[in-house]
Image 1 (cartoon, one colour):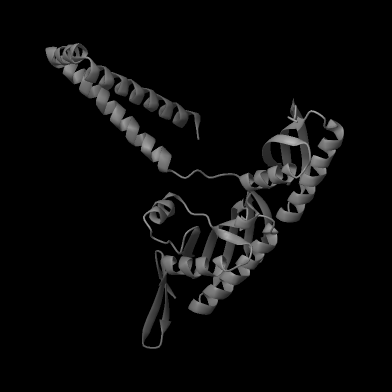
Image 2: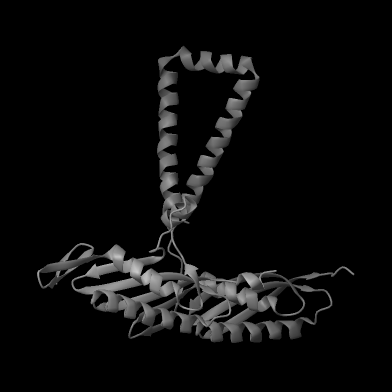
Length: 126
Length: 174
């Protein structure tokens, strides 16, 4: 596979298919959000301003880095209060790895999950 | 935030307040406005000095904007390193969970929690105010047990030490 900064290309019959870090981040974000115990992703200032303007950021809280042929994904998430954080993080790692490798055929070298906070479910807030 | 950055923001805030006070004084008092204009327009050196001060304040204000935008790295605790990667939990999350655990204890009125990682485990310092009729040793022990149980179960971290400081006794109103 050839590699430009932030893009990984796979030669296929008839040409090549390239994947950018943003695409990998979006796939990872969608896979992580589906896990029970994940309240949401923890984004930075840019995502916050975008959401205020009504733009949904599907890669919020996710950073994908491509180095040589390896993909490393860093995930910042907010967990649901009461869930076992360790188990939620493991489930996120498995789900993201399955989604990225299944949809792109790329090899995921590492998935690092950082739990930035916990959120009390809406029905439990008084 | 570093000390220098805090001082910068304090200085900019004071400069902004001083500017607003001057503008209000000029708006309400024509005499003050005329005095300021005549003073500034009197000499080219005064004009250069005022321009220089304004330029320096602008540069500091731009630096202040970058300080505000810059994301600060917060300390994290390492929960696990496995074949897929690493699992990390922010220290703020651990403190938050500890505070929620302390809240479950009857008799607790106010809570402050500080957490730091040392010797491969979490050290948690809890400051509480209790109801006046609480038996302090019993409540403190219950706090320690509840916090240790919750943090170890929810985070998978080892809790090395929990210090409880009872700061205040609050009379509950009948």
